[in-house]
Length: 123
Image: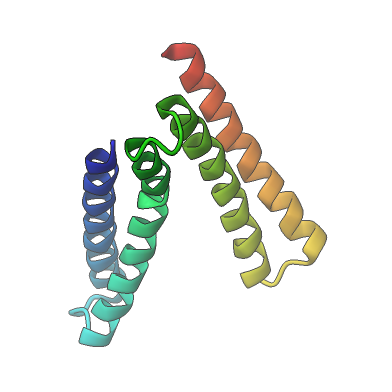
């Protein structure tokens, strides 16, 4: 599971970097500047760290500190919390009020929760 999460983090962050690169060149109709590539790399790193975050729980399970089922449960629900936190931060960074940001966090958490429930029904 650790290798799967880390591999996914690398693959998705590279896809994010590529998408950002191509999107910038398409939008601006010029080559991407070195400083922009650095910023894109930081954003791709943020994506990778968000994806790789649950690795901690699976390392603990491998070390027999927690059970495998517990690691999966914590990974799912902490991911949901992280999605809500991102939604709240996005609202605040966009200049929204605290209540509006909290509502945005709730909305994205609700969508994430519905996806978790759907996956649980299908697997």
